[in-house]
Image (cartoon, rainbow, N blue to C red):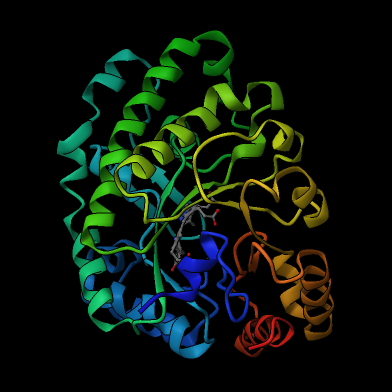
Length: 343
Ligand code: 1CP
């Protein structure tokens, strides 16, 4: 059976415009909190294919999205490259021994060895595929090498990126070596996700906006394109979605063989359409906080439909849903996207 979501990623005409929500599997769902409480902590949940499968499927059943996104996290990659990941309550992710010099880089596990340690992710994908309805797509994902490197170098989430940026401007060779090593792992990791059954790839560059526009290609985009082109060459039937958050000044320079450009909420959709709409299908881009109000949600969905006209478009939020959004309002968003596009 052909999946509407996959057809839409390739720019084919579909009976309606499909929709999913970034971070749709997670803390705004009481059903998620229940499974997470049983798992003990977040990483246990990622490591347990049965439970990870269960929370992946929840938003499909509860809010009615057209695609599921694998439940995992981008940070399992550096974790399996030998960096010990922990989530500290109230503070977010932490790596105890960040990568700051050549010796640190040397001790990172690379390539096939790191990618083959992520078996719990591949097992989760296989379980999901057994249970997901045939007409729904499963999105697999990775962080972009730059976004992953920010956590690996800083050792945690950061507001200033000062340690990475010090490296970017004073020792760019080292930063490139780190990015190249992560890129090699990500290529193989995404290839294994495809072989395990995902239907679509999304690459999240959540911290793209931390790089000045004239350096964005050199330190992030080219590595994302390298991953996308490696996958497109071997698996042309699998669409690739690129989501670099907050880089409107780079839209003129976007290049590469991939299928869908994820537009974040700070970039006007009409502007993205003018710059990229002929070359890529566009995904997005409602400001996630509009979900707090049903009226604001409807207003935005109607405006997006007017701009895109139901062509070469996938509805989504322009970044992740927040944990305190009422489930009713998330359902309203999905229903409105379906209503305006004729489902
Ligand atoms: O239950 C919990 O308390 C943990 C919260 C949580 C969840 C639900 C984290 C910790 N990760 C996730 C799941 C997750 N993360 C998914 C699958 C669910 C889905 O999308 O439906 C995905 C795709 C991610 C990806 C991810 N993790 C990104 C990129 C996407 C984005 O939203 O920008 C990033 C930056 C992370 C890092 C991360 N994971 C978790 C935290 C608290 C953080 C740090 C965020 C920060 O530094 O601000």
